Structure formats: structure tokens, C-alpha cells
Image 1 (cartoon, rainbow, N blue to C red):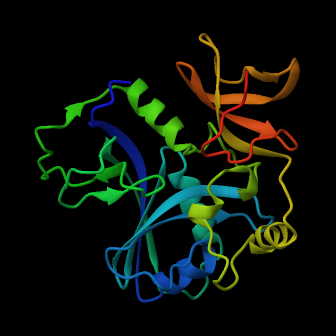
Image 2: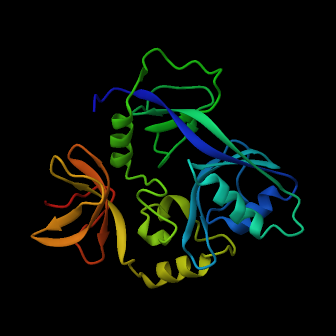
Image 3: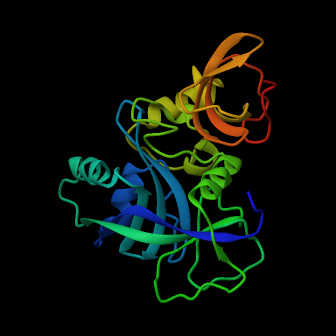
Length: 260
């Protein structure tokens, strides 16, 4: 990767929830604390099935007290809307879906961009710009898809359908610290999340950032000392995201790598 800040056009599914019950309804459905959000706040969240499995990984933007914008990975908007509508009984909230092209700005902590929305782990290295009327700083160059993928791997941020799936639970995703509130009220799927956290239980696998050899492809097996310990999900050059089975010694999946 070049190393200099860049931008790239990305497509997102965008769900808008409006109405007097929008905040309370989303708070009752999402894993994140929505009730305390104020206009301008941005938080990651999971939308779960009642069984605790993942329906969608979302970014929640509080546009106003009665309007929230939820964006998710392309292809998961329809299922997100269907899931939100499933439990919407006597709730004053309209839910609409659009597909939008945003500009993802990566690799910068020093450049101010009007209207930029924090992305991924919201540490300042990743922001997205929705408005086409915003002019990006001249110091930003247009990047490539491979650079974008590499930056996502370095952030250990998953994509639905690639790194995490609807068959998985939050503890496997690597985003619980960012997307789950353990102080809010009930929501579908909470029981499993809370039980695993309170008992210190480990999932059968979890998403990690690892080293890999040149030529590695997604779905290849991860081998440590000749033993299969997982499989790669996203690969860029010699780093990758991989689902690693329980018991393999990776102290911190966000910063450590496996000796391959």
C-alpha cells in the first residue's frame, strides 16, 4: 500500500428510519445504545436474530431526534429492512431503503473534511463522505480497491457475507467492543451475547488479523505447525483476515499475528 491518504467510491445499502418512535424502536432492536444518541452521533451496531446470530453489521447515524440513517454492506439492506419490519407493531416509524455511493477516505488522522462520518473502528483513520457537494482536499488521491481492502484488513473490520455471515454469533465477529452495549435494555439476541460475556465464554472461532504467504487466497486453510486452525476470509498481499478456531493462542486479535 502506498501509505498516503486516499479516497475510493464505495456502494452502501442505506436504511432511513423516521418517525416519533424511531429512536425507541431502534434502541429496542439493535445491540448498541441508541437511546442516548444525539444528533450527529455515530455508532456501530449489530442487528441480531432472536437466536443471537447476526443479521447485519450497521453504522447508525443520528440525523435528528426522529430520523436515523443506518448503512450496511451492499446486498444486506433488504434483509435488514425485513428484519426491522418483522417486529414493528404499533410503532410510528417509517423504514426506507436506498443504495448510495459514498466516498471512503482512508489512512488519515490529520485532514478535516466537512460532513465526514466516522467509519470502521472510529479511530480517525477511516471516514466516509456522503454528500457529492463536498470537495475533498487536494492532498487526497483516488486509491485502488486493493488499497482499500488492505486498509480494512489492518483495521480488522469485517464485511458481511465475506468475513462474517448470518450463521455466526457476535463473539465470532471481532466487533463486540465497538458494536455492543452491555448497559442498555433488552433487544433480540441479547441473552446469548450477555451470557457469553458474563461467563467469559469463547466462541468456537473468531475473526483475527494474521500473516500469510504470497499467493494465499480466501478460503485457503490457515496452518500453524502443520495443523489446520482456520481459514482465510480476506487477503491482501501478506496480511489477511481469518476465522481462527478457539484455543489457538492469539492474545489480541486486533494487533497480534500468527506465526506461519
